[in-house]
Length: 374
Ligand code: FE2
View 1 (cartoon, rainbow, N blue to C red):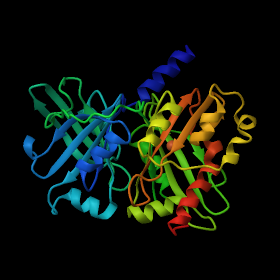
View 2 (view 1 turned 60 degrees about the vertical axis):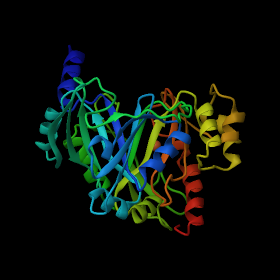
View 3 (view 1 turned 120 degrees about the horizontal axis):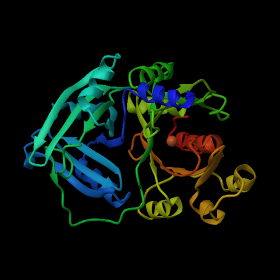
């Protein structure tokens, strides 16, 4: 009885049920070339297109897909576009973290009535394939969460887009879905945004890292992981912490000229194969020192993988109470030292690689020092 009541209470509390990430949209300087990069280097497939040919006058958008992950790359066509202003300030970066819901009107009502700032009033988009309902609210920086309802739609992506058939289709690399998406916020802004995710979106703080967990000799950051009720959507929030030198989060804030998405973690079920392919296609990864592997088994115990390919590719391993995970981080994918990707394979572990933070951040600081920003 107590358990049943507990379940009912937990479900009732989830006022914003999410089915997962619907898509991530980046506003970039040259979407045509960015689409080529994400196809060639990451193995995304062409899915849909919107632009002047489809009646959209001020922008072009390319929709890419790999398994369950959809990525949109959008560029402005004129200098007076808000997309151009966004790009001038931030460079390439994430504008929309779109979430898949069963009712976009209700999601908007529930979040805005709890203090969320609406950016897109609920709208119903229709074409011959049905309807998609969309709404949106603001989160940190200039990032917005869109709520996408597509249960009455059977087209390729959304009204306004046409299918994009390309003759250039590089093989996928085994990327499956968005595991989590991390935001960098300013000094003393982590807790206010934690509160936003708790109060406005009904998320819970499932893990916290203070500056003692995440510090090297030189720099530090703090992080809290926010998760929705079913755990399909996880948003860790980082803020800089005081250290002897400049925190990696500060470097991001300086170069992005504001708060924004720091990294997108994408799941794979075979990280050795995925990373090998990404490297062969020109994706650059952070490299930890070879000595990281000398005491690997002492730290993480037995794992299914051979150590040789992990060492060769620089893949990191960490264990928690529930299992282990393998992960690796790309270098920033823009010229500004801003957004990057994480490739992650979970084998039971639900955490985020705390045991790797030190080695990882030392590797990051070497890159930061090379840029003259440490
Ligand atoms: Fe991560």
